[in-house]
Image (cartoon, rainbow, N blue to C red; front, side, top):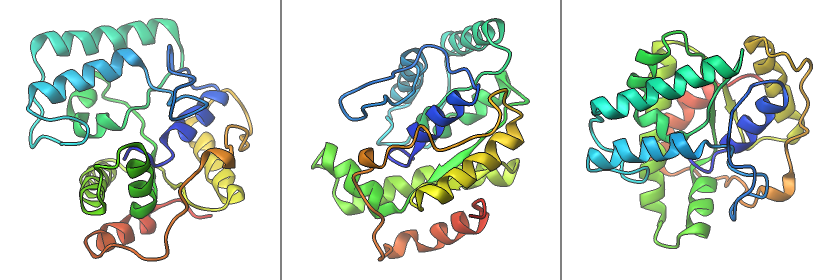
Length: 221
């Protein structure tokens, strides 16, 4: 889900040798950048738009055109040619992941989640039209997809709203499973001054069951 520590995770893995290609390294809402490829983001947005949806309005189904499939195949081929180990980050991919699996059958995933009300406050700070009900509904939509993918093919899931030391421990575990060339990990990319919304003790009723599943499957800290 957006606003869940995905930029920290991508940037931290990049520091450990995961090539991301041409990505945003600074933007108005994130001093270190969202670490997303503008090319991929535009492609994903285009697919969602063609299915009468968007990142904030997930469509029920996401069908790719032949041209869009060719664009993704071309992106994958160029990254394969350029880097021995590469990855990408875009929360929209959770809504479109079947097509990614077709093009990269051996893809390896890493997930991350955050308290739904912390996500809501972050979304609301950027766009006041996000009320709590809307934010939580979107949080559920994305994290249900995350859990579905994890059940299909288990992968590490991190919890973002924990102490920096625990976050660093989770990162070390992930780096070890991915065999990245960067060696031992640390929390160098983490900047607490960029985390503006703390987790709230209360949990919306609609999110409780999913939150429990995510916590049960998260890496131990």
